[in-house]
Image 1 (cartoon, rainbow, N blue to C red):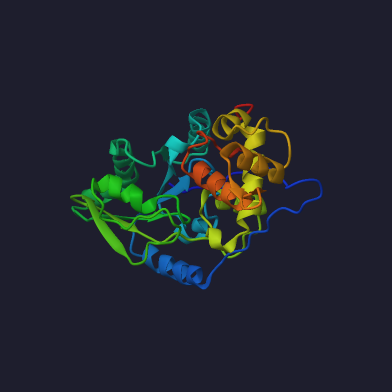
Image 2 (cartoon, rainbow, N blue to C red; image 1 turned 90 degrees about the vertical axis):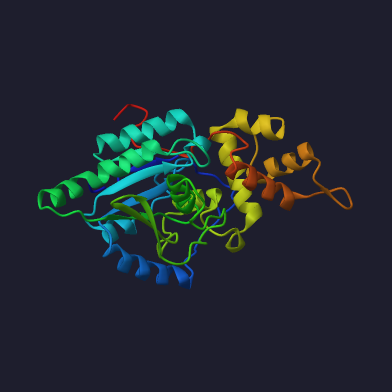
Length: 307
């Protein structure tokens, strides 16, 4: 079944203090253009697609170019890393996609049962296999696993296989070559590198991706990004933030909150200066690992009123 990109609402809108500019994120390295060409070519060899997004930002972590690339191919949407997201919000996202006619499931980042994912893949493939069976054909159905960097595509495949056959890393963009994996007598999956789109024109979406590690940290101002993250968490999950960092309240801009992280964790430099860089790295790492709490950064439009 096809998937139409739906409207959504971000839950962020932050700065690092009065009048401070927010981080501008622009990243489209040359290898992404090569990846797009490779993906377009590979799509001609598959029957359907499994698209992964991060359950903590289920819309921002979807590549809008995939709609055109996939065309009318059947698609399963996997809200991955759901064990790091807020359960109630994940349920609302799944209901949102169900109402839109999209086949969508949740999946944990590590461990958990893969049977629900396998059943959904079989459901996605069933119309095609039934048509072929009616013609007396037993053809292997091939599916491609797609998504932006660092949403867990290779780890997802490893879970389906019950092994570590696909390359997996917590760094974005490490999958290199075409890999086919057999998950049933007539079912194969292909892993692909993560693909970003040429213009990150929606800076809110870009910022959420950066928070989650889908854009390389080396290309960003880490301290400013971490300040924006921690200010966002102060607005949407103040109790979780306080419980983790003991910052003495969620008031203040991102820079002030990072300085309080330094105080709470004892991050000091020679001369009794605050080690804000270390606080920034810790804040980003601990959020991405789910140590601050199970937090979802965006909600579907109409979630509040059930639309």
